Length: 65
Image (cartoon, rainbow, N blue to C red; front, side, top):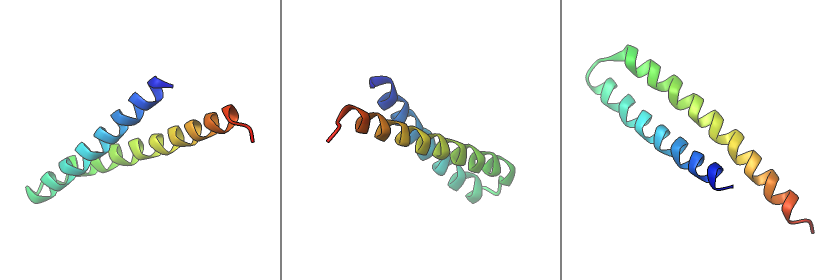
């Protein structure tokens, strides 16, 4: 379970850095790298959602009511 939390932290940091990179690229007129960072952020966000669903499912299986 610890690996999943570490992976979640990695995804969060990646999304935050991508957003800051997008803002920096947009302000400096570098639109191609900004498009790459948008794709990267979207991919990391998708993986984060899948990971959260998996963590939620594992908690429900451990704690039957």
